[in-house]
Length: 576
Image (tube, rainbow, N blue to C red; front, top):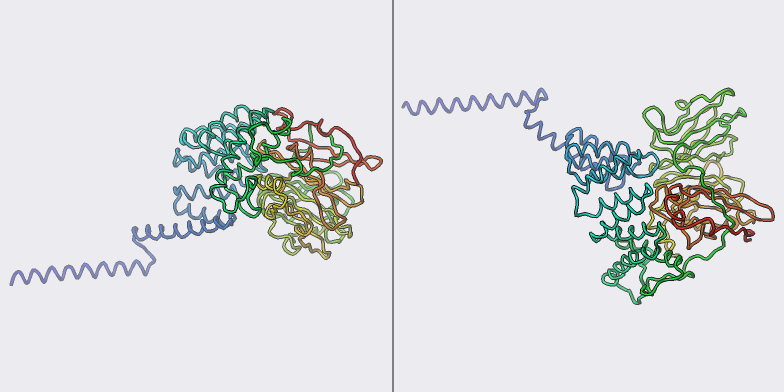
């Protein structure tokens, strides 16, 4: 009996405890309280939901939405390394280099051996792009630490070599590229040849270019179907390039440029690697001169116009924004001084403003404003008068102007009396090289874009129909009648803010408003350059002179990086 009685007591106690726990949990639910363990589990679930959403945005290329999503994820888990890294990478894609650097520094503070954070920090501190911080000393420190962490990888040596190159240290760069090449990196091998090319050491450079092309050719023969002859070294124009193919294309072109300076290909270069002059454009060159100092393609841009219709020139400044200054500023001319009237202007809050173009696009008598932002599209501002502007980009048919663009200009290409709009693009170097090597290759994703003014405040894109679906690394565009036929031609000034690429600039001849055709390379198809700006000067008797401003970094290398003014010294009548 006693045992039964004790068992009953124990069962009653357990039942009472269960009822008490159930009541407590019910009370927590009713009052919104959650047990600490449950709260932690919910926080983890919330984090992964937000993080996965951020990744979806990033993978789709929607970096503007990825950034706030990663920030939200980091509020839930401040020490999540992937969130920090991808937040920094997304900010970098948007051209917000300073905030990207902060993210990579936070990641390094959490994990001092994070090679990816050290590498990206070195990159964003050294990249020569609009709005970038440009801390070469900090970049070097990060990259050297990255090499300590990743001694068996080519990437850190390549980045350190590019840093040396942009500081004018071609030989030091070559040594870093040599180390990268030793790890079997095709890009490192190409860059080693490139650094020697910049020093006019063409004969030494050629074996490295040939080595990359040979590796690419072996890979192509082993993997590509339909290769029927030895000369079939280039892939079909629509086929994407592998990393080896990208290095191979560049090496093929620089092998040719080196051979041109040596009087021809030396013995031992296979015929399938040789480019013949007839395969590249052989077109005329107007008289051209070079200036030692010229306009800067970075920093503050200023445009002046009578925006308020009071016969006084107001001004708009475009550049990198900071905590106290927006990237686009409007200054009203009072007659005695300029007054900052930006808060009332109605400009959008974006990252670095790179370029401004002014024209009365809608014919209402007031000058309007078109602004390109680095890696964040472009905006057409309609002038409402009284220092106020309205974003009419989408209504005008100009949305989705993504990509990297240094400039834009209004010009009447078809002479219908309405200002048309050209928006330049800074194409990837492999696309530029591919266009030079493959005339049939088209790159609509990185070509300049031309918009025909339809009147009534609307534009229509005509890029493909006028033949502008080619890739150029354009820093500046100039519209002028270069051939003297009365129609405005285009001069695309191609180059780079850094020392990492060379290409010829190009004149596009206007075919009486029906299209554009490549007409002349500057300095020539055989002499690539790195130019930042140009001006076309009309001269008597149908002559035209083009004044060019090379990148100041070119002075750090012999012959300005592959060419000298004497290539273009002869003055000649402009062809008709």
